[in-house]
Length: 459
Image 1 (tube, rainbow, N blue to C red):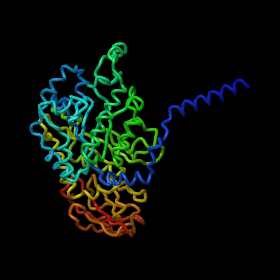
Image 2 (image 1 turned 180 degrees about the vertical axis):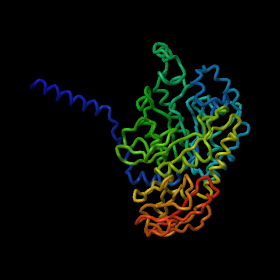
Image 3 (image 1 turned 90 degrees about the horizontal axis):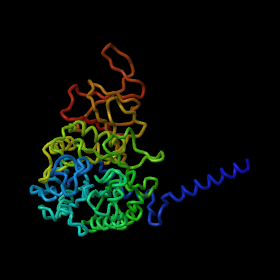
Image 4 (image 1 turned 45 degrees about the horizontal axis):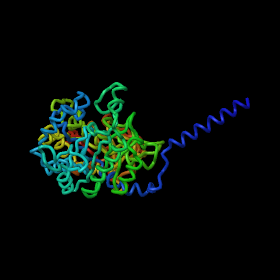
């Protein structure tokens, strides 16, 4: 028994040693407090709505941004898209105007996606826009155009690179030999350390040549590549040094730390509730597409409708999150007509209802959500917003709302909504409420907006 106990003790000590060796301890440079982080991120939390832009060589084949991977296109065959990339209709001022019209407060552009192609004039690679028929830096005028519209600037940077000669091949990326032996042979001469240096050099360019950068979206870690392969801690240290106020996402594989990320980024799905880590609510942003592709896909037909997209924005904010909605420009440098239609539709709704989005968050639990509704809440302005996903007949019952608000109005036109709390039964046409409940007296006809919103001015 003594031997058994000793074995168990030594086993536990070994587990603790291994855990300590693998733990990502807080580095000396990561000194920011929770309060300081909240202050740094306040603009982002208030903004709630941003534009993602996926643009690269994949716009030329127009069959998804992962076309090289999905179709297993060899480098020599993919080269034709590099030689044809000529966005002659590119006008970033039009892009920025569309984003502003839609009510977006920040944007994130794919400076380099998985294919390894850079949209700016990097000095560390010839696989860049200035070497294509485009013959110019495409990022600088974009940054200037969006800033001129008052829109915050974000850069996406792919950790994965299907083109760089030192990116070590693995079972998932890039489209290389699938067999282990063939991959090992192809990896001879590749040096992941050199690729780490390349990433740091490029990110240094991005964070020093274009002024203040508000968001950095790195993408992404997976089984086969994680924080060791990216040298994530030192990469993040560099990022924080160059742009101390930047907001960084959660894809550097530093998720078991409280310093290695600012926001959680669920992709292409709607969380059921406010995203939490270890039981604590955290800042989060869902990135979503208009259709099933991030890059321009000519033949993609699963496009979401304007009402779906507005509902997605509302639901996201009602759960304390941000929505980053993607556009994939064409090879000639324009937004697809289908994207423009949706941006315009969202913009029409946002023109009248944006104050139920900006600066808003999940409503306190003391407000029970009415049927077929989403609630958003602005604590600073003491306003509660009821988004009616289905228009009711004449009355909307608010359970437990009595004494909690002093005025109600439709947000689209500012028209008053009368409310009362009748508890005494009358004739067969008398509508009553329970003690503590309130009935809003609504018009029979739904307002001519995609999603009507009622604004309650709270006590």
